[in-house]
Amino acid sequence: MIDISESVMQFLLAFIVVAPLIGAVAALLPAPPGLKGKSPDQAVLRHGVTVTGVILIAAIVLALGFDHGHPSKMQATTDIQWIPALNVHIHLGIDGISLPLLVLTALLTFLCALYSAFKMPAGPSPKAFVALLLVLESGTLATFAVLDLVLFFLAFEMVLIPMYFLIARWGGDQRQAAAWKFILYTLLGSVVMLLGLLLVGLKSGTFDMVALATDNGRGLTTSVQVIAVLAIGIGLAVKTPMFPLHSWLPDAHTAAPTVGSVLLAGVLLKMGTYGFVRIVLPIAPHGMHTFAPYLAAFAVAGIIYGSLACLALAKKGNKGDLKRLIAYSSVGHMGFVLLGISSMTPTGVNGALFANIAHGLITGLLFFLVGALKDRYGTADLDTLAGATGAALYGRAPRLGGLLAFAAVASLGLPGLAGFWGEMLAMFGAFEPAAGLSRPAYLTFVAIAAFGTLLTAAYLLVVVRRVCMGGKPAEEPRLADIQGYEFAAWSPLVALTVLAGLWPAVLLGLTDPAVQKLLAGGKS
Image (tube, rainbow, N blue to C red; front, side):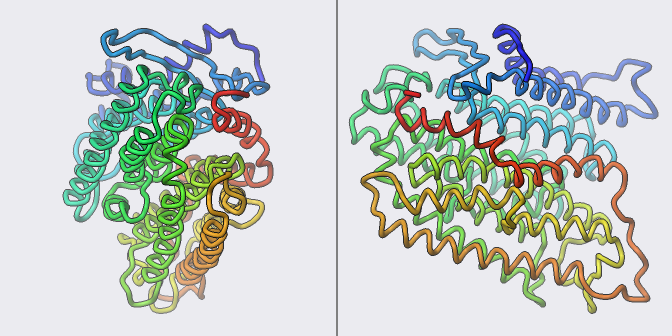
């Protein structure tokens, strides 16, 4: 790690949040002569790669300069008064919980910009596409960096509009309906969440998340905490998405362009679970304690429901869409994250945070791969992909088939890959839940979740068998295998999936001290 002064760290974090917005404005301006390349479209796509690349470098430098000896301490903090009448501050900072999500966001956005520069989704002007991608990045990064409840809400909402337009303008079939469903669900959830955030701020006298976490609910009555957790939790649960508030997700994923699906699964869903850990757990612990068993029940229902929906889609003759199947798999995977959080234990919350990162890497890779398959076949329909004798992807495009199989076994939680640790730790946490929570109930939840892991393995292996295996039919020519730009966009996700699986201490060493402090009421 490198030694960087606090003022430089402050600048880096502010730069990471603000620079994408400046880049978005620049993307809409005419390209200077000499930078246009072969066409203005090419110039603006290259601009997107450059800006997201600079943000990623800044995020990596920030991670290298982070004091890994004290990951529970807020670092790179900026605190400027913004609205004195409401005591709202522009308060930024990172700790071991937010840093991995910040780097993941910067990485996935860069890989999406790189992929789009070579494979721009069909639709209107690339200028608007790049600008929306950068606004989306800025909102997501701000969500993980801000430490004020009002600012958190604004950043949380900021991502909705660019994602709506990415689906509605660059999506596939049924894109308008999917985009409307996405925006209506998430906006309705957000209105309820805003009421909860305002209740906390007005009753406690501050919107500062660090001060509220340190107070650990002592300034809020139990009834206020219960109402606040219910209101804030509904908004976060819609974004997560928690069963049964998930129904916008499969439509949004199916209609979204490839990079839209990658960012939706890899980054946007994490904002909901991050809110549970950063806001609900430390600020309203009594309210969370009241609702934890219900959250766990909905979480395991989502695990089973998502897996059964995937099995139904994978079945021969059901005309299942592979993108839709992976979207439903996200409902199941995020169920494990919510189960870990609901245990209210350091083990469970660490598992949830690890599963968040693993899901971002693996499901991001899966959506990239399905997008590539759709480009080659013209469809993501499983029956068409499987064909009469099996799609024989191993025979027609062996590297693509091998990578799809790798992503599938990573997603089902094979030991040694990133998907394993988060789900296992989440179940370990639920096995011994926090004091006062019903252990028999949680043992039941763990048993149901464990059954869900078997269903997950079943549907993913069915997908691999149907899409990848079988001899190459003579009448069907070979497909284009992995291209250079695809290799560049996907290989970091493969490498990190293996690294996190083999060396989980890198991530857990960051999150664990911060989680311990958060659950102890701000005391290290």
